[in-house]
Image (cartoon, rainbow, N blue to C red; front, top):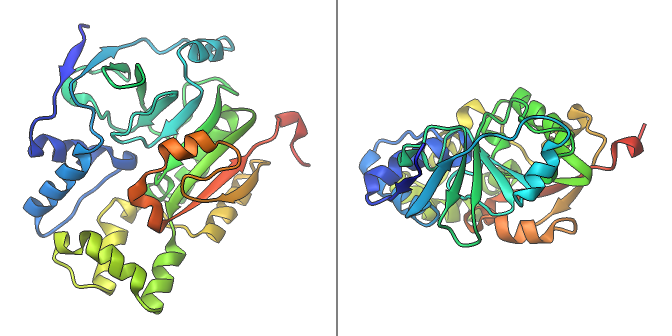
Length: 287
C-alpha cells in the first residue's frame, strides 16, 4: 500500500477525529453540539498529526526475538490510550487510529513527518492482551485510560501490562481523582468552579451538581469506573501484580522522569492522581 498524506484542514474533521480517539473510548453527549464541536476541534488541533505520511507496516512476528526487533525500531515503552498524542520512543496504541483519515487501513502503521522521527501506532483494545512478548518494554504509560473501561477491563489491562514489563519496569497510571471532585462538591467548591470555567460555558451548565454530572457522563466515563488513589490501590491489590505502587505527581517520577515530563498532559494536571507501579524481576516477586 502506498503511503498517504494526512491533512486536518477543518473543524468537522477535527471533531470526528476527537470523538473516536480520546483515551480509546470517547462518547460525547451535549445539547449544544455545534459549540462542543468547535471546542473539541480547537483542543484536538493542538496535538493532531498534521501533514504527515502514514505507512502500513507488518507487525513483528510474535516470539522471543520480537523484543530485539522493537528495540531496533527505538521502541522502549507502550503508550496506551494515546489519542492524538503520538510519542517517540513508544509504541502508541488506542482503539481508534488517530491517522485513519490518511486512508491507510492497517492495524500497525508508521507515521513520518513529525519532529523526532518515525512514530509507531498499533490499533488495539487494551483490555485484551497485546501482541507483544513477555518483557517487551521498559514502561507502560496510561494517562486517563482506566476510567473509560469497566473494572474488569482495567484488571485485564493491569495484568497484561505486568506481563509486558521488563525486569524492573514501571507502569505509570493517571486518572481523574474522584476524591478531588467529591471534596470540592462538599467543601468550598473552588475545584468545581475552576472546572466549570474550563468547560461549563461549552455545555451551558450552571456550576455545582450539573457540572459534576457532566464530568462523569460526557467523556465516556458512563461505562467505566472512577477512582481515587485509595480505590486504585485496591484495584492493584486485586490484580495481584507483585509490584509496588509509588505516589507520583504531574511530570514528576523517581523512576521514569523523562517519560513523565514528556507524556503527562498539562490539561489534566489539576484533576488527576499519578501512580508509578514498580515491578521487580519476576523471580524476585514477593511471596
